[in-house]
Length: 409
Image 1 (tube, one colour):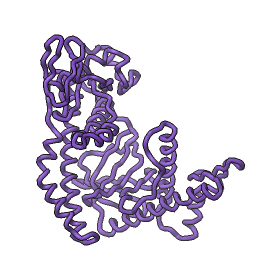
Image 2 (cartoon, helix red, strand yellow):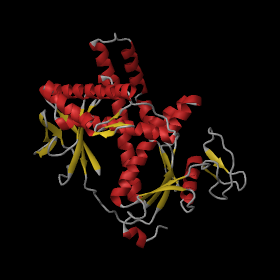
Image 3 (tube, one colour):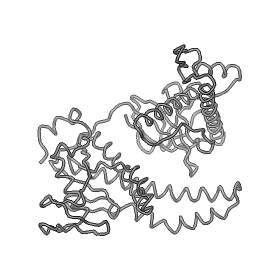
Image 4 (cartoon, helix red, strand yellow):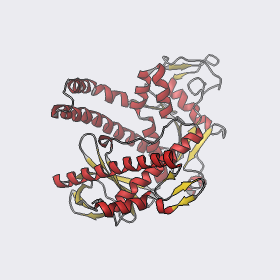
């Protein structure tokens, strides 16, 4: 399944209606969450969208929150599309399921929270044909019909496959832009010509990436540095405004616009880089980093390092590579990253190197190479060791036969 994201251009009336629907969905989330908490504390009943469960009486579908919502809609005359309303309860179910899963696995993450209206910025349209319908169009703009809102203009910057459309999500960005993301269930395949080449890719802070064949790409940090002065001035102007004033909102939008521009340029660079790697190589090896955990861990002893990791977009590049490899029939291998910057690609022995050193010099065989390039070479070597491979994507059953017929050198 793939998602296509487009810019929306609603009219003033449509923007007002979308905002009202977000108000109603946010209110329903908070009311449903409060009801679940009260029922558990008062009656020992676990309530969800489909049923209520009691340790003595078992499941009771007549108390399902979805059924209660239907009755409330009839009594109160709530003018919100039923599917839009019901899906809020489904989202709350998933929040509780993820909470219980994190508790079982010992992962961080707390109880589902009440939501402030300013933090509710999306609407999920679950069923194509009922909650939304793609109308198409000619020229620069197309149209999509949203239940309860009307026909909205869409900037179709790339064609949308209309064969098997699914769920859509409307979102309001912090800069004031409206966007829509439409899921396409059909798995697109665009096989590329076999190149017979493999590469190790090391994601770093000093370099955006370094490859095992010596290529180094500088990226994300330069983008932030170029906008640093402009962003700093905008943040200072924002800090001097009066809370709740129109000037403060205008200053907030200005800060968001600068950050949005930097993020969009970073995404463009990473997407183009992923495209180049997938077109040039049949097998790509990268580190199996838990980026979010690394950022949290670095905040305690090296806050600047955690910021640099986030600015480089390590997880974004991995997602882009996964998407490209699946579409074009290439293979992405996630490798154990332990000790890659301390291991010599020539002799295989380890030599301690502090983080400040940019060159790798082996203390045993005098091998000398750029530190990031040497780490990428170690990644490429480790794909031959099954114990070092964490994941292959796509798995062997989904890799096209043409790759099996011509083994990668």
